[in-house]
Image (cartoon, rainbow over all chains, first blue to last red; front, side, top):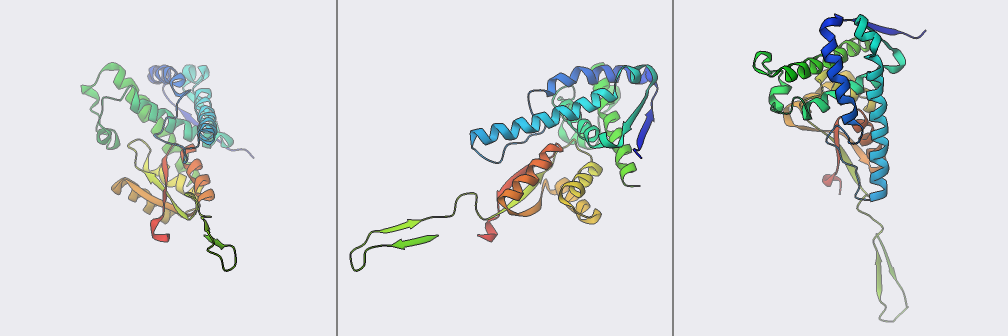
Length: 149
Length: 103
């Protein structure tokens, strides 16, 4: 039997986060989000390597985009099918990496790694971006805890 | 390496064929630190991709976190590339380095 993981959030609180998430989706279409290189200088092989990774990355982010659909905006309720767990976990990682290079680019790596962003001292957009960053981390933690009870 | 010497008794030219390429030998798969991916996520990826047990995965994760890098697998190039690809697919930063100690 296919298992599902369900989570619920306050729709009003989550709305600006979902809208910001959606604004980031397209920015991850053309480039790898992680600082990665192909293992070879061979141009053809490198193009295949990066192309395959981009295709995989696109599936990850699409899975997350489908999770945060209009129904989620209205109800704050979403379910992750067992078969989509890997895609959602990777999608969260991908968008968190996008946030690091976009909305949260002003912050030092150490600051992000230690979670030392002071919410009261940042702009409204950064606050929303950091909210998405934390939401996706929480979703990852929730899924991983269910994978390893 | 194969050495072929032709022409009996003559001042034969020696042809040395180097059968080793830059890609031969033993390679390390190295994961580099990033400030974004969660410790629990990195540990899970090591278990899933590399088949590590919980203790091994946590040890390598801590090495990445504290030292900035960890050699997570060592072996022949083809398999090293396969692991590198899978780790990159999980959005970890992974590189290959020649294992000089095995040369």
